[in-house]
Length: 404
Image (tube, rainbow, N blue to C red; front, top):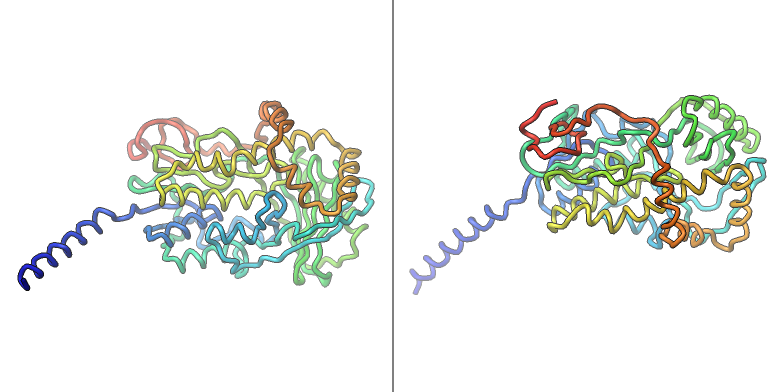
């Protein structure tokens, strides 16, 4: 009986070894260390997948300038803090809740709104220690993700899964602004008016002695400096704030619908590389991180990534494009009417959430908005058919066969 036990145990051990080999998890290559790519990397590594992130710079967040941004907290019932937990992310970065602030209409009248929870969470972008980018990098490294720094990948790796997270390839809104030091208390303000931000808005964010002020334009990009200077004048008249050691910065966001999200069943496009952005106000970080999570989920659970995006992201993007088309028709008088109506609410969060949810009239507006929408600035790096470079999303050849 002892000999029989030993033989069976050895066979069982061999069976386990063969099973482990057969179940070996496919390597995932992530090109670009943006939030979408890093969220995908964290979730895949925590599920036991070998992951390599390729970043053209020697640090994360180099595209940014230590400016403050916001993760919006009004489009879903789920608070943004709970959303991060849901996608497997902890808040080991600056993540400050901001509720009541000041809003100014084109005539510089001030509004304060009632709200039941933070309107947004302030975060920092860039390579500073407490930026979102650095926090996600730390979580990725703790999960076992391998980084290849200073590596610019121009062709998709031949083997394994590939997630493209190289950032926007076009510009549908641009920000022009300054970062600076100040003694002002923590604070935020938003300013509307086509004289300072055509079809957009200007914003001031102050946190722990540092501040960001910028104008966000959806039109007239060549005159961004002109509009920024006018917006700065308006802000200085309304807010008593000292500005020290100011530095200019700029950026842009890209919105796109109906483009391929996968290729050859092994390449996935996430974040703004996939065009995931809020067309109304440019609050797209939740889309970017959510898309990274969905790409990882599709790999781990053998699900369709496009189908997941169509369920969780695309409907809200379609609504945001309808919102953008409607917003561009408000002009200065419409902005004031909108602010007046919000000021009447006991809680603006449900009202804003309603505007971000699908409805019958948004479905009617969307086809019109979609036909009218055109990307105003495009990166022409490479869109050849049947190409192996990381930007191409069309063609049927294997990526190993063709070079740019």
